[in-house]
Image (cartoon, rainbow, N blue to C red):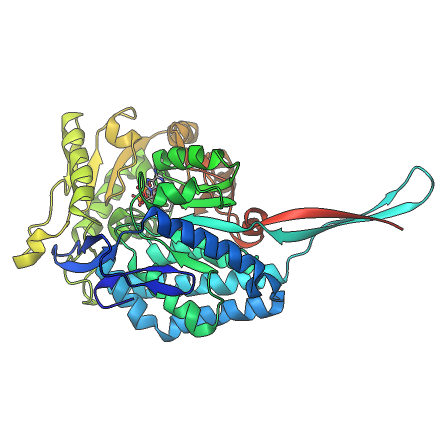
Length: 488
Ligand code: NAD
């Protein structure tokens, strides 16, 4: 990677072709130029897929499991050694505060290699001893084989973390990858190419092609006949396009898609903790985490106190220089995304919302006024079929609805096309288990939010995804089981 120029990384090397078309990466903090990004051509995508396929047949395909897992640990070590470079790159691309990126994005980005190396080493498969018709026996056992070349298409909200969440298990299982990072945040994926070379990952195992979705690297990768499976995190409607592209080649897909996650807060909760954690669940990363809670249902007797408490938390966020540890909220990813988020400010007002706080952009000084800043926003008074309550906004916003009965809260929580995550606050143990099992979502947090054990299944119900990743569940997607039947 050259300075302020983000190259494609193919077959173990950066493609440094000065004549190549580029596009600009601008900072969401102040609109300044972060870098020029090389636009991958269709030919680049072909070369990346061919390199990934060739690597399967080369030293990577022949490497022992033990050696492969050691390499994955070295990748994690090297990311940690170069922690500050990854941190700076992630902050420059996203504008997120260093306090967040240094605790979540980069450490988890590295940990994803370790956790899956260990998961693969300890994975078992089935065996069956079968009685045969002639009175003999046969031994059946399964072996796991890598699927092949995995196309990895990533979003911009947690760039390194969500990319390695896929690349970690894919490589641990012996596959090779071609990554298409988000056009908004390509730097850490590209920087990871250097790490792969430094620790000795063979050429072609890890490739990065930069560009956009339709008629660009995203589409060319996902419809490529040389790609055996596609793993994607992003918007639900993009999932539809990718699924039809992958269908041409009967390539398997794993999808982590959008959400409109509910939080149910009962009167018997620890109110102070519930308010504090809900503030994180709504406003962290400026509301740009798929697991965030944009719909809150609060039991009527604590409704006013809860709204007041969350309002105070919302108004305490401090926008500013992301490298300053006093900054607690960054900008949205882009002015374009802010346009989308603020369009819901208008819709909420038009559909009868009471704006408890926010509903406007921050008045920022100097060049920061050119950034994509937006105030944490809370609405009440909207109907459950209003647009801001039904659609994913992906900003620091929530609507709070009162409820009287548990069943009513569950019914409202489940009245959504999405089913990614949910959150329940109560000190009644029976209710906690009952509600957790009744809300249609891939994960339910009880008296917590965003506690992630990477061994657990992760994924969405309804239009929030297909499949589960995490721990051994990732192995199901990144390997194919073959049965061997031996007559004894
Ligand atoms: P997006 O769908 O716009 O883009 C994601 C990636 O897909 C980008 O790299 C983009 O270039 C690529 N892409 C777009 N169109 C494509 C096409 N036709 N073919 C191939 N690739 C294409 O999503 P985003 O705006 O980057 O991310 C925000 C979305 O991601 C939100 O909906 C959020 O809920 C979701 N998300 C989900 C999870 C999860 O785990 N479920 C995690 C993070 C984000």
